[in-house]
Amino acid sequence: MTDFSQHSLLIANRGEIALRILRAGRRLGMRVICIHSEADRGAPYLALADQAICVGPAPAAQSYLNIPAILAAARLTGATMVHPGYGFLSENAEFAQAVTEAGLIFVGPSAAAMRIMGDKISAKTAMIAAGVPCVPGPDTALPEDPGSYAAIADAVGYPVIIKAAGGGGGRGMRVVHAPEALTAAAMLTRQEAGRFFGTDAIYMEKFLQTPRHVEIQVLADQQGTALWLGDRDCSMQRRHQKVIEEAPAPGIDRALVAEVGARCAQACRDIGYVGAGTFEFLYEDGQFYFIEMNTRIQVEHPVTEMTSGLDILALQIRVAAGAPLRLTQSAVAMQGHAIECRINAEDPASFTPAPGVISALHLPGGPGIRVDSHVTAGYRIPASYDSMIGKVIAHGATRAEALARLRAAMDELQITGVATNVPLHQQLLREPGFVAGGVSIHHMEQWLAQTGAADAG
Image (cartoon, rainbow, N blue to C red):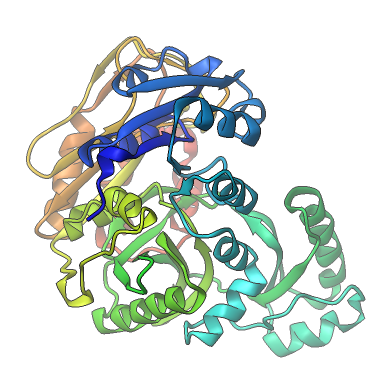
């Protein structure tokens, strides 16, 4: 049995996920080390760590993305494990490899598995081999010569979407509705891919017009056990950025989810994947279509933790250290429903980030309510990083109960001194389409267009 008191965990991240990892590490009996930038020097959660070390100035490129500085911090503090959290270097295969080559344990998949799943083309090839359903379209990159694009698009069927093989986060993609726009869209996407993602490889798929965004959480150990831990619906989005997430996805046949989940677990075994990960799908007309895998912990992992009763962060650390899962698929029982609101320091009408000092803070509570946040009254939100300052999660025996609890919690939440998107969430949780469940990824933007974003304030 692994003795975690012999391990020191360095958290290569910041904010609410750093605090969440810190708590998991402490519960395992580990010594926990937090890195921070000069902008985060006074962050309250740093006082909870056994050691905190500055790795650079405010710009992320000089601190949270600075691999040599992070590895130096690990050496100086005697770390044995490194957890990347989400964002920053969490899906950077070079970082994972550098950590491993330094003789440390990377809390995540191997660099090789990360490279397979980080490239959309090789990921699609691996998923087809595992029997995971994919979006219609060739599983190879488009050739350099655009002369063949028209025939490929005709075979796929318009509308099509051109994507960067190394893309993500909503960048590096263009929808094409007619043949005359195809070549220009492909050329622009290729240029953007080379500029932002380090490879100009692009590929083509069928563009699904009113899909939902549904994902499957997986967890795998080094002994060959791979489990799927239920599904999540993340369709409430704006500009490809998730706003509200829930588990399970409402209105989808549970037998179909189980079939897809089992294939995702098999895919993990096939590629030797170790750790937590998420298979992301578009779901339309009763069919799942794989789009990508996130090889890290997700922002929305709490809704799966609430419905599964599992501490995914602690399990992620355990399997990285070589401990077996000691769980079987039949033992994974999802109970009730959970919904999460992402709380951002931003103008609720314009969505412009709103850094500043939180003058007063009251967090909600009560049965089934969980708040993951690193902020306190007096905390200064820096302008250098993502505007998310926390998450409010509600769990209930039914979706209706979870929704009622979350409405009450969001009405109770008080944050003053900076603008937040709390008023927007208060409206969205009462919006008839979302209340009914099963909305498409376009629903929120359509609602904003109909109501006027300014009304959200």
